[in-house]
Image 1 (cartoon, rainbow, N blue to C red):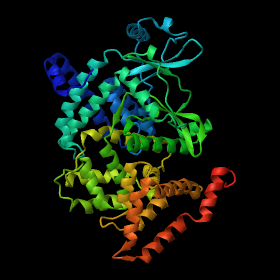
Image 2 (cartoon, helix red, strand yellow; image 1 turned 90 degrees about the vertical axis):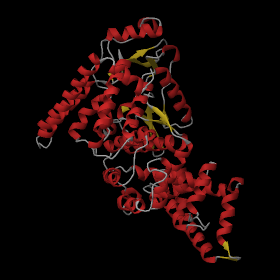
Image 3 (tube, rainbow, N blue to C red; image 1 turned 60 degrees about the horizontal axis):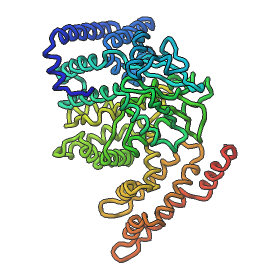
Image 4 (tube, one colour; image 1 turned 60 degrees about the vertical axis):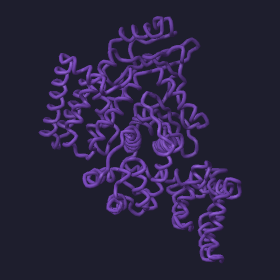
Length: 549
């Protein structure tokens, strides 16, 4: 159950009676789909578009799990896929044809050592949902505890091995014709996809992933992770506590249940940022079928339940810190620093000349920022970046395939619930708060890097920029600034703040004299930001939210 592209290629080449018929089927199905889309895709008739959407759904479903996964990724992109197609593609998440119930019961008995009616107090005659790799039953244990029982599809290892070989061959052969200059990185990206798929069908690994993920959010009331029932789980059967919640698919449906889509989006995005930038361990498949909106609210955050922990990945500490810095460099319009971040992350070769790349980044990214963080348009960025990759030596490192998938899926889910959502408008305040709090040694180092230039001088514009976005779009900015003010004061007076105090002293006392202008500017900034009126309003809001309404 491990992905090995070289071994699997040899395996399939030695079995032409398997490879050739499947290759013909794939090319025939995809070729026919492309032809129909070219002929009818421009039609303005809703009936034609609905027929095309069903054709896409049926084609991907008929081709099996690997192709369904591609469709799932597209189903999270309302900015790339027509709305009338999107509704059909969403069915790929957990509304697929189920495999025979008798085979599921047989699999349960093989894996758990006893028939289902002996293991569960109540077991249904049909699954409640069917997805690409398995189907889920709602069963009851003794004591009236309801559980979700996920049973893997038959013959899945063989199907994945066969199709991944063909997808990799077709991908590498057609790479020069694709509308992205991915270069030699495409094979690596497909390999990363294959590796994650094979990890996803190991339910013991998924159980471990779920428990690790739950431990990271153990103190967070806004994130719920179902408990794994280890005695009723194995490599191909996974049993967890049942989640009573609504799928995060439609804002009107959520509002009808008296749930706030904006609060749920905020929770999902902040949770995703914590995974990437704080924990270094993330859920790589946060599509609407894997996230549930739960009742309850904590401040301006909704409560969200996560399921399906088969596709998880880690990010190194160095990459995690570089990504944090890249967000700050982007909003501060430090395109030299951003180019260096791309280089450190592997999107640019270490030997690349950054001189022509910096103005290109400024042209592509600078204009998209607009006048504020909230106007940042991720779709415009991806469109322009596609053009940039043809002219400059950019490539996509294979290790970032799942990270990009996670970020794109998260933004797609948010856009589905709120078309005006901007992920950077939540990401940057989150990063700013973490930097200003300086709650870890790595954040303190990054804070010093951000607010002091290479010559050790204080960059007040950068500090002001950080403070300005902490409370952006908040109904009571002082409420957001109050904890930042407290954390910043604790840092400044603590042993951990020794380097910060030293740097501040050195920047204010230069050439053996005190620079009054710098002192005045710093005091003015702090007075504007942490004025009594703003802080009092924030304190009132924290003590009594209704009083500030």
